[in-house]
Structures are given as C-alpha cells and as structure tokens.
Image (cartoon, rainbow, N blue to C red; front, side):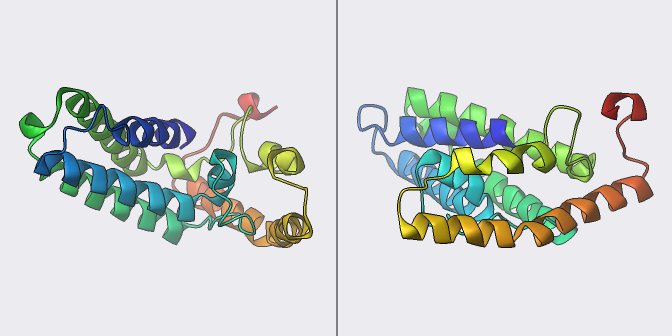
Length: 184
C-alpha cells in the first residue's frame, strides 16, 4: 500500500508543477484524476495523510475490514477506468510517463486484490502490530487538539485491531497465510 501511495504522492507533486502540465484537455483530465485519487487516499488512509502533512484526519486510523478492502478495490477499478478514458498520446511528454506509472500501479493493486493479498495484513517485518506502537512518534503532539486526536486514535485501536483480525481470519479460511516459520 505504501508504495502505491508514495507513487501517487510523487505523481501529484510532479503533475502539479506548472512546468510539467501542458494545459491541454487530456492533461487537465489526468490532473483531475490524480486530485481525486489523492483525496480518496487521504480519507482512506488517515495515518498516511498525517505523514504527508495533511492533518484533516488526524483523529482517525482508517477502516480495516473486508468491506473496506472491497470498497478500495472498486475505487481503484473506477480510477483505472477513468485513466483508460484519457488519451495518453494527447498528454504532455512528462504526463505520459506519469500516466504509464499510474496505470501500472493501479493494475498491480487490482491484481493484488484478486490474489487476496489484503488477507495478509501482517508480516514478520511490518503490520499494524509493529506500526501502531510507533504512532506517538509519527503524529504531531504540540497542541491540545493534537493530543485529543492522538487519544481518539488510541481509543479506535480496538476496532482497528478487530479489522485486521477479520482480514486474517478470512485469510485462514481462504488458505492465504504466511508460513509459520516466517512469523517465528
């Protein structure tokens, strides 16, 4: 997930540069798609939003569930459909490169969902069980509002953990698990 979000951040930053965007209709449609994807991802992944400096969702952890995974996949399908409706050849040269990168990222995300990788939310090196304890180092803690937001996230941890457990149980049922030796 972070690779895709970081790629999106890079594309948005590059495409927002007036020296890169040619200003044609295709470029405008492409920029609108990037903007819509950015907003969607900020709402869906509030921890990542905080790390990028977007503090609108600092009181949330993000929904983790089978339904949320399906919703995100449906959004990715819609984003890819919109991307495919943009005439790549009419884009500026730099936007064509961005288009190709974004298309590949979206296709990979759809393939990952098809192969049910969302049912493996933890590994021996990463996952909510490792990342959440570091939250206090990742969020702003300077004002009363910052602390209220942090407390809201702490209070939401039970549902957040339950969502990860739901995914892992579905993974077990689908026989999608990591080898036990890795998790030791």
